[in-house]
Image (cartoon, rainbow, N blue to C red):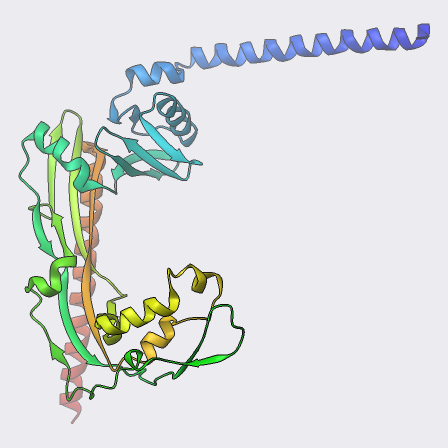
Length: 327
């Protein structure tokens, strides 16, 4: 290495060291300013801030949330799927929870899944009532299948495009119904798959120190009713389908072969429809202040909607009276 190159090399090292030293001084100055402003470190906040759930506190930032989440993950208290879905781990099960941020500040955390599994923990600790059975089925009937148009041939797995005759058992030749037949939704024959446990009230609150734990449930219309075609309820037809399709893996790997769902649909004369509700339950942790803020916002919204409805009713009444007077 020449003397000139050595000179510039050492000069570069000296400048780098001076720059690093300046950066360190700046960092230390920032830390000193932060300390002077009374800002707490993360560990100090974890120790001192009133918690709403686990080690999470109200008004924490998103960065703080993820840092605490990382700590809880290390402690095997929670799990997360790439920081997209979060789960609280208990001895009974893991429970998905969701966070609610407003203007970059944490306001609440809600447990939204496996509520039936975790409820006994709350029941024992807070002396809560048992969950009760709820029938989510609200309408059940058998009707003619508007898509009834029997398919008479099918393709065998591994036999190319060659067509084979569909067995008679897989063609519903029964007479069409004269009218739709409704069933008793309280009959266990029909509702056994639609019984779920619910809270004894749609909403109730546990008062715990500075926070509320809000238990809430809602019933919503399921826009996709369950439909069972007549051939699916026919043992002979299902046996014939099993003989052709085997274990089913062949039809999965060879789409359009064997007895497909489309064939079952078109070859069924009737269908049974189950219309149901979906039941959503949640357990939300939030400060009392945040709870009352939300309640006030909701009440104001209801009042505003009520006022708008009254104004519209008054306008409609006035238009009607004007029309009568003009006649």
